[in-house]
Amino acid sequence: MSDGLDRRELVARLVARRGAALLLAGLGSPAWDLAAAGDHPRHFYLWGGMGGAFAMGLGLALARPERRVVVLAGDGEALMGLSSLATIAAQKAANLALLVLDNAAYGETGGQPTATAAGVDLAGMAASAGFPATLRLDRAERIEDAVDVLLGAPGPILVQARVDRRPQPLVLPPKDAVLLKLRLRAALGLLSVDP
Ligand SMILES: Cc1ncc(C[n+]2csc(CCOP(=O)(O)OP(=O)(O)O)c2C)c(N)n1
Ligand SMILES: [Mg+2]
Image (tube, rainbow, N blue to C red; front, side, top):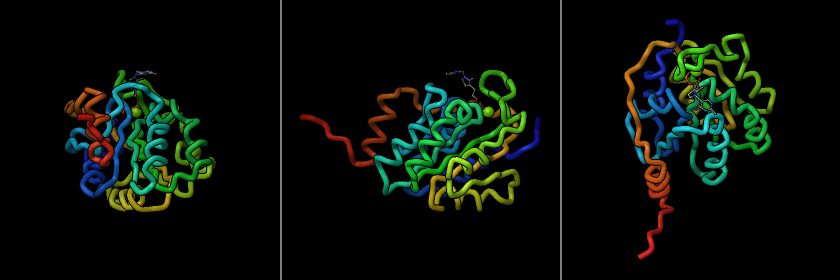
């Protein structure tokens, strides 16, 4: 399927404007997209734990309320973590934004169709949960507007972006989870090293 946005372009344009935001990527393709846009200590990649990206984003957002937190997740990842939408809405996490890169497939494992292929509406589910802003993004001309919302509008926010399934070059981020954790803590000024 070639319908949909270029996921690498979308993520690159978000990263170009992210400022001090913390970016967290769910496992698989969203992590490769974020790495392809340029690795950074304020990027955190989930190499496993499918279904946990939204919940981890909520934890980060609650722990660092002065920072914008943006989670990049596949539709499969989002569907596996649906219950987090209720918790995020209930917690009124105003600094949290979720970007779902929806290719209507479990791309990483061979392209099996997900429930969004059958019309399940993730933005509608987030709106029903109580998210003050949700957006469906399917036109390249609207990418900058969507980035404005992701980085600036009072959250929690969910942007469901329809992306295409063209294969992309594999760009792997660091895999060492301890390194990823410690460099994020250092970037936030939280790292204390015992003498
Ligand atoms: C609990 C669990 N189930 C299944 C997998 C295998 N798995 C890894 S990536 C993936 C598909 C991810 O799909 P999606 O989030 O839509 O990302 P895409 O690759 O399509 O961008 C699956 C099923 C896993 N890692 N963990
Ligand atoms: Mg997918």
